[in-house]
Image: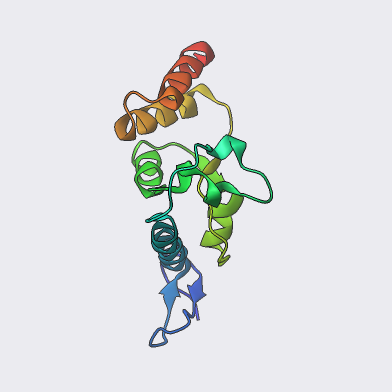
Amino acid sequence: MESAESGRCVDVPGSRGGCTDSGDVAIHWLRDALSRLAQETRARPRNGLAHHGADETVGTVGTDDAVGFDPLPLLRALYEFGAHVVVIGQVAGIMHGSRELTGDLDLLWDGHSVQADAMAAAFASVWPSSPTTTALLCAASRLR
């Protein structure tokens, strides 16, 4: 069965049947993972480890960056500012059905200045004074 809007239909386990848009399913899986991550990290003491210090044993889930991790505001802002990016890494895996959790968001972009401007605007709308926002604003100005 196909959805008229996306051309793809997914049967969601536990649903009442029928056609569910695959984009809706992907967001459902991501929200579920974020809820599980919040429960897993809620009472965990801080360990001083950032996601850059994660390894195959600890993983980003074991870092302090996983506490409160929620990529949805940034993903929404990237969409609203017209930034053409691709979600890669474990968040993409989750949106395709993986149950493994993560504490970081990996994005891929084409390197064009228009995209740098859109990405910088999106980051600035979510985190106005973050180092990532500053780096994107500098990159965008160099690419112009």
